[in-house]
Length: 65
Picture (cartoon, rainbow, N blue to C red):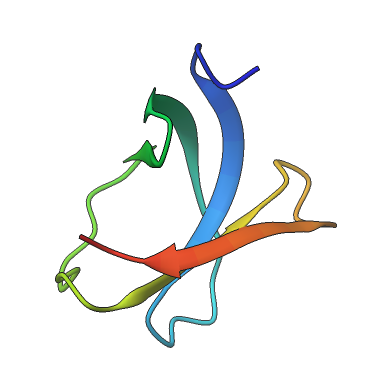
């Protein structure tokens, strides 16, 4: 259930490292990812990839808006 903050890891652009954070459903087609640390250079149109908290399963990907 993504109605509450759910722990994840994610990557954006071409970064090799995983970033810890949380995901929460905002609307039927919109989720909000909150990073545990500051990230520079995120821009609309880039792709993001969401992984399980343990980094073992790719859950989804999408275009950042």
